Length: 101
Figure (tube, rainbow, N blue to C red):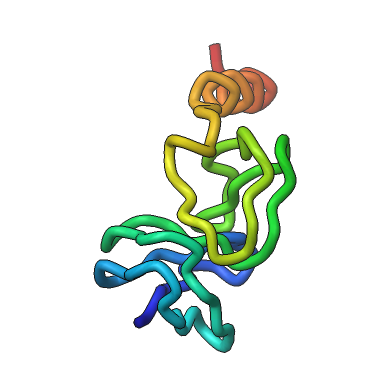
Protein backbone atom coordinates (compact mmCIF):
# COMPACT_ATOMS: atom_id res chain seq x y z
CA UNK A 1 0.00 0.00 0.00
CA UNK A 2 1.14 3.54 -0.68
CA UNK A 3 0.38 7.05 0.57
CA UNK A 4 1.57 10.39 -0.77
CA UNK A 5 3.24 12.94 1.48
CA UNK A 6 2.39 16.23 -0.23
CA UNK A 7 4.62 18.48 1.90
CA UNK A 8 7.26 17.40 4.44
CA UNK A 9 5.57 19.66 7.04
CA UNK A 10 2.39 17.56 6.75
CA UNK A 11 1.41 15.35 9.68
CA UNK A 12 -0.84 13.33 7.35
CA UNK A 13 -0.38 11.50 4.05
CA UNK A 14 -3.01 10.59 1.45
CA UNK A 15 -3.56 6.90 0.67
CA UNK A 16 -3.77 6.16 -3.05
CA UNK A 17 -5.89 3.01 -2.85
CA UNK A 18 -8.40 1.50 -0.46
CA UNK A 19 -6.29 0.36 2.47
CA UNK A 20 -7.43 -2.46 4.77
CA UNK A 21 -6.95 -2.38 8.53
CA UNK A 22 -3.49 -3.67 9.44
CA UNK A 23 -1.96 -2.97 6.03
CA UNK A 24 1.58 -1.59 5.82
CA UNK A 25 1.59 1.78 4.08
CA UNK A 26 4.67 3.36 2.52
CA UNK A 27 4.44 7.14 2.99
CA UNK A 28 7.58 8.72 1.61
CA UNK A 29 10.43 7.17 3.61
CA UNK A 30 8.08 6.06 6.39
CA UNK A 31 6.25 2.80 7.03
CA UNK A 32 2.85 3.16 8.69
CA UNK A 33 0.36 0.51 9.78
CA UNK A 34 -3.27 1.38 9.06
CA UNK A 35 -5.17 1.18 12.35
CA UNK A 36 -8.49 0.96 10.52
CA UNK A 37 -9.67 0.72 6.92
CA UNK A 38 -8.90 3.92 4.98
CA UNK A 39 -10.58 4.71 1.67
CA UNK A 40 -8.54 5.90 -1.32
CA UNK A 41 -7.98 9.66 -1.21
CA UNK A 42 -8.35 9.87 2.56
CA UNK A 43 -5.66 10.82 5.06
CA UNK A 44 -3.53 8.65 7.37
CA UNK A 45 -1.71 10.12 10.38
CA UNK A 46 2.07 10.12 9.96
CA UNK A 47 2.58 10.34 13.73
CA UNK A 48 0.52 10.82 16.90
CA UNK A 49 -1.51 14.05 16.89
CA UNK A 50 -2.90 15.38 20.16
CA UNK A 51 -6.42 16.73 20.56
CA UNK A 52 -6.33 20.45 19.70
CA UNK A 53 -3.26 20.19 17.45
CA UNK A 54 -3.58 21.31 13.85
CA UNK A 55 -3.94 18.81 11.03
CA UNK A 56 -1.39 19.91 8.44
CA UNK A 57 -1.74 19.11 4.73
CA UNK A 58 -0.13 21.00 1.82
CA UNK A 59 2.16 22.46 4.52
CA UNK A 60 -0.83 24.41 5.93
CA UNK A 61 -3.34 23.79 8.73
CA UNK A 62 -6.58 22.34 7.37
CA UNK A 63 -8.33 21.37 10.61
CA UNK A 64 -7.96 20.79 14.32
CA UNK A 65 -7.75 17.35 15.90
CA UNK A 66 -11.04 16.82 17.74
CA UNK A 67 -9.54 13.91 19.66
CA UNK A 68 -6.18 12.24 20.10
CA UNK A 69 -5.17 10.63 16.78
CA UNK A 70 -2.62 7.82 16.70
CA UNK A 71 0.02 7.21 14.04
CA UNK A 72 -1.70 5.14 11.34
CA UNK A 73 -5.22 6.37 12.17
CA UNK A 74 -7.71 7.40 9.49
CA UNK A 75 -7.92 11.21 9.61
CA UNK A 76 -11.28 12.56 8.43
CA UNK A 77 -14.31 14.56 9.59
CA UNK A 78 -15.04 12.12 12.46
CA UNK A 79 -11.87 13.21 14.30
CA UNK A 80 -11.10 16.63 12.77
CA UNK A 81 -12.80 19.94 13.60
CA UNK A 82 -13.53 22.35 10.73
CA UNK A 83 -11.45 25.55 10.99
CA UNK A 84 -12.74 27.24 7.82
CA UNK A 85 -14.12 30.26 9.71
CA UNK A 86 -10.87 30.69 11.63
CA UNK A 87 -8.83 30.53 8.40
CA UNK A 88 -11.14 33.07 6.72
CA UNK A 89 -10.80 35.44 9.69
CA UNK A 90 -7.00 35.14 9.60
CA UNK A 91 -6.93 35.74 5.83
CA UNK A 92 -9.20 38.80 6.17
CA UNK A 93 -7.05 40.23 8.99
CA UNK A 94 -3.85 39.77 6.94
CA UNK A 95 -5.54 41.26 3.87
CA UNK A 96 -6.67 44.35 5.81
CA UNK A 97 -3.17 44.73 7.32
CA UNK A 98 -1.82 45.00 3.77
CA UNK A 99 -4.20 47.85 2.96
CA UNK A 100 -7.21 45.85 1.74
CA UNK A 101 -10.70 46.89 2.78
